[in-house]
Length: 383
Figure (cartoon, rainbow, N blue to C red):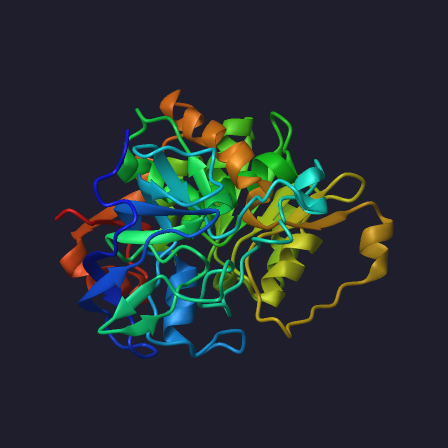
């Protein structure tokens, strides 16, 4: 199958961020053809994730002022054309672009234990393609910067082939798109890193999309009790759909929440997953696991200068603290099987999707996130 637009510049609509925190503007941009080891993708559906929001606001110490920029990284689409040297994709393949890649050649890719590719790991500070240090997007002759190698808030985008995952063509793209970041991050934190045994107790700190995906992982693993910890009680009703059985709001207590959880669970939970990025919550997540076998997994992203303290005796008493990046999934190797979990009805994605907007209404998705409404808002590029 060949593409009629291969090798040509494609003019298309993209939602451009001109400055920090200002509404995106739908503009006509030009998307250059893919270069060596690159693929051009027609995006069908995309969603807004907290990472887009963070770098769009550009308020945090780890953020960057790189504008104009095309954000977006949770998405699904179809391969439009391929660059030189790409032999694992064909025109028409159904794909998920992913903000972190798998080159297949570096020490990380060759290690069974790591998914942190040396060449293609997430880099929010780079706004250009690796191949030639240039952008594939332009607007009236001026470059528009890429975002974490994906830039899916555009009808067409160009990505490195190592950041693209070929999936089952029968999987609905408006559901599968949410697996390219947040849901896989939480799900994998539980299934690949915490690995709770059937019948175990699991605490989930933070009940946004990532936290609820971690809860979903605990449900799939057969946990007997899943304790959701959040400061927003509005989340509690929603969380029941993801298998959460108990709720704790730290604001209801005048003592550290880890003490409350240890009391509730006869000495601590078997596993905990931290999904907020707040260092105090990280300590609570670690100190609420049972001695002898408890494992806490950090999944939320803190500011890069953040530090925390805990007593070494907590480790010596056989508690384990682990971190994870993208749920320890190697994108190209592992994500197709997560899509299959959905297709086999082991994993329910529908309950993560709380809103839908047409591409022209993309700023509404930012409003929902700003107001803490819902989980994932699907943005349809065709509407």
